[in-house]
Length: 256
Image (tube, rainbow, N blue to C red; front, side, top):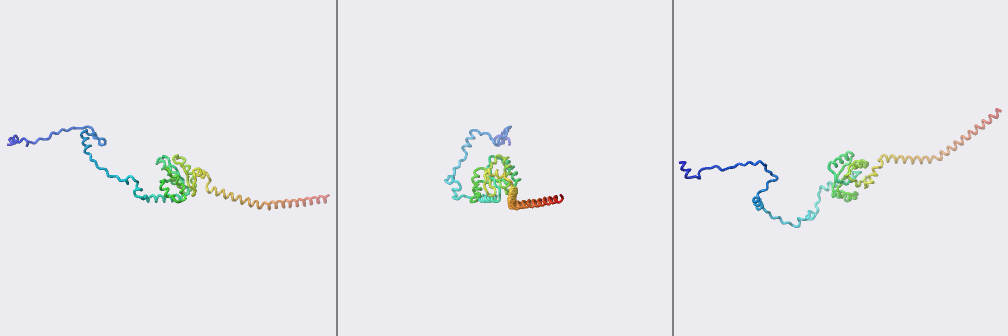
């Protein structure tokens, strides 16, 4: 019966699919995939979707300040500007440098050396500096911040010599000027200030000069008195010697 069914219904016989296994030795390159066949590449190019571009208004080509009508101020800039103003008010020495091409490692080494000498290296933008010095006595230093720069602050004005010695080893830092005790100085004036003696030495020289002047006044006031005493002393000695000579002469006459 089964043979008859198989002969009468050949479609009912189940056959397995023909499979052919192939092995590829090469690896698949995900970053640089193989170019597809020309026909497939053409089909892929045709089936790529095209989206319409969004309409562009005139305001898209204007900066944000013009579109908003009001310039937006960052409140963080005001905080940094107050910090810069505080540094300027409480520092007796402020040095401004122009920075050429320099690495971050060199800047770090310079910052460490300055910190050992009680000096602090800072860098701020021109906009923040302008906001910090606007309407103050420090407004004259604003033209020094047109390019890449850095600032050194110190509470001791006698550190000018140490500052020049440290920055002399870093040619990328060019000294432009500075503020010493609320006075703006150029580079040459800072060099001359570094060669001046310290405050204690200047005070000692002033005290010595005042003492010499006082001694000269006292000496001049006592000059006439001293001369009178010398004259009287000579006169008194002359009288005594005369009397002694007379007594000796009388004694000789008596003996003869």
